[in-house]
Image 1: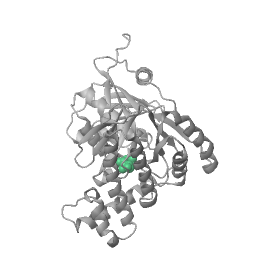
Image 2: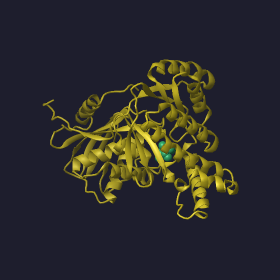
Image 3: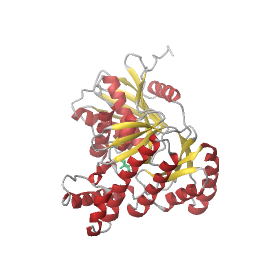
Image 4: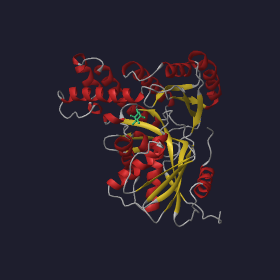
Length: 403
Ligand code: GLA
């Protein structure tokens, strides 16, 4: 799917509002909202351990174009699926015929449960975040929907609360046990910056990425990700076991994020496998995020790249969430001159790898991957060069006829 600019998505959304849902957009009642996908630069499987993450929002987004109704009906139309799904505010349930709509249904459900007053609305959904590839198209849809409803009904929801509500929709309504990272970066990203987030306090800081001479290259393995949900939940349980072990021995420890490398070293021989290695990943990864932020503040891309490489090794050997396809891509990148660092990104078991590359070497890296990856895996990769963009925003729509 090729990227499409925001104005073009809004135009297509407005057109579909009229042709598919029979609504003539009016500037007083209508609105558009966008929210980006993300790539995590470092800090993997740390968010649900109260730890640190460092993602950036990417120039792929979900756009919703919507308009208030006078009744309690919600009508959604997905341009990707060419399908409509409808419900009323007093009865929000999943739609097995249109699972894409569950993300918006979930958002409506959690907003209402949190006490926000909504009305009915019509909305068209479009976007260009590749789906099912670990670039957080679901989080982008949730955050775009919250941003649309925030604008349509004047709810006054700040970005961190958007992220919390989006995560709740995913956890409680859709039924996927994700952490806070994906929704948070989609809500609160900043152009040209990575987002350093403390997933316990939700304190955050935008850190410049210094991408004048470097590029963020993301490679989709295009591997089918069958195991990801069950393995993700298994890792979460193992991390809880690790946290309980340390909590019983070190005062003040509530999560693995609270354990230092020194404390880990002092107790690791008592820990059973694989809890020892799972814990070592989380403890060391949290430290790598802190070190990465320091390196970037000093403009040291070489150091940041080394930390990305260490993160991959830790995810591969200790946390065991990589796979052959991801390892093949990362190893090609490691061998390519001009690559600062490369690692798997996201939950793992497929999805994408991310590399930080000197701008003059992007072509060489892409060529190497295009040549070697299919030979080694039988799969065709997708290669993207992403820039870091702003988090979710509301976009005004023109009345029909006035555009
Ligand atoms: C998925 C989840 C995130 C995070 C990552 C791993 O993307 O949605 O919350 O846990 O995996 O870092």
